[in-house]
Image (cartoon, rainbow, N blue to C red; front, side, top):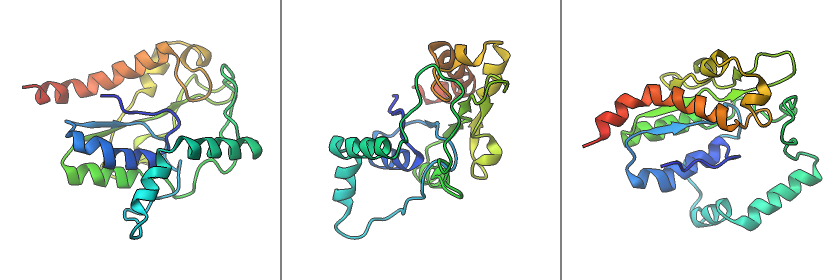
Amino acid sequence: MNLGAGGYRSGQVLQLIEQYVLPLEPDFLLVDCMPGDDVRLRRTYPSGSESLARVLFYSRVYRLLRLGVGWVRDEPLGPVGDVRIEPRAGQMVPGGGNHEEILALAAAAGVPLWFLDYPFVGSPGEAPARALAPANALPEGAQVISSTPRLLASGLTGPQLFLDNNHLTREGSRLVGEAAADVLEGPLRAALP
């Protein structure tokens, strides 16, 4: 099952896994979020606010308000096809991200977890891809699928692999999928009856 949602930060991924994915009893989890992408979430809500947090998290009105605030602050997404987009100042949260919490949640549920290395393309002149989430940027003990070497070995350019700085083209997605399949084939076979 692919329950990924483009634009979700690690805090939203943590809540999604906890509230909706783990009840489905998955055989494993594959998560693709850049480190330091979000403020760290508290694992418990103050009494009475859990239902409000869930409503806000999945509310279209709330998402539209957040997009509107981003537009007013001049923080829109870059145009499709521009591979020179750099992360805006302040986009990464120092010491932030919820990867440790995601890892701990999966471990507590007994579900194997892999992170993707989050391939990214930056300024012209850079290699066609680099990893924003290499193993040394993730919590100790995290299993990481390195898809960036597969992209580099393809010989394709940044615009052939990415629509913008971090959204893959069809070909880029295929290559990342192959890298993930190479690692996950064994666990998938073991999960089949």
